[in-house]
Length: 144
Image 1 (tube, rainbow, N blue to C red):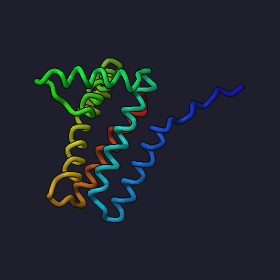
Image 2 (cartoon, one colour):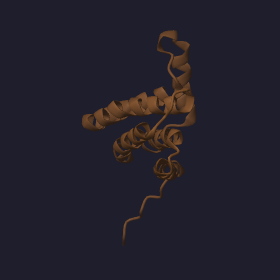
Image 3 (cartoon, rainbow, N blue to C red):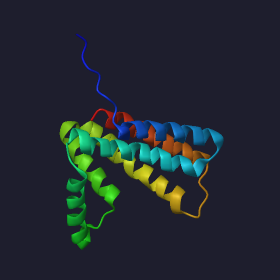
């Protein structure tokens, strides 16, 4: 009897679609949109880990978010909170995987923020960097 293959979650599927879209957009010269897709391809994997590997719920995440927001000194965005929670989990499992995610996710988030909100140009090299960062992060996240 052959072992059952685990079904891909919708978040994993969306992550693949966003990563593919980032590459397509880059090749078409639509550079600002690349950072958005590259970042969300990682963020969707973070959410997949939260729900499937950690068996947490949206309510669990909301409690952490609310607790963080109630402490003024620790006001963080909701993405930062999820990133920190998943990084803690990965760090326990494999410190070297933690370093890959920790080193690169912040840079990717900054590129996405710049592409989405800044009045500055977002050019070829910025777009390429977003794809490269996502390409480093995603294989690590897929392990979890």
